[in-house]
Length: 86
Image (cartoon, rainbow, N blue to C red; front, side):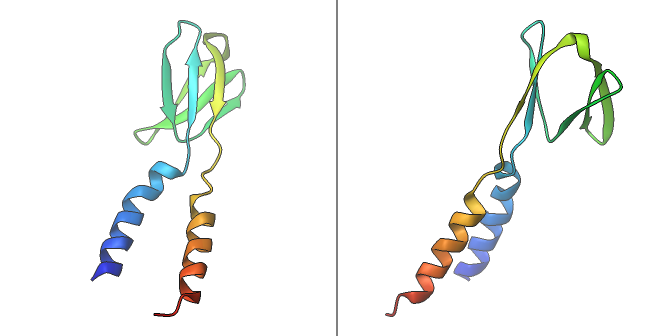
């Protein structure tokens, strides 16, 4: 039963750990998107299942968030716990 709770919690938390990009506009506003890309003079991203393009002149910068190293740490923790004998 504990394993089931652990799996459910892990599945709920993983999307938050995946990282995202932040688009910063010239007026200071920001939006967080799963992935932003530059294409044909526009910054494009997917929001709500729709691809939206913003003119590059309106975007100050894109802050790329790196992927979390949580899965690697989880694997090392799981391997270490297997070595422990009761």
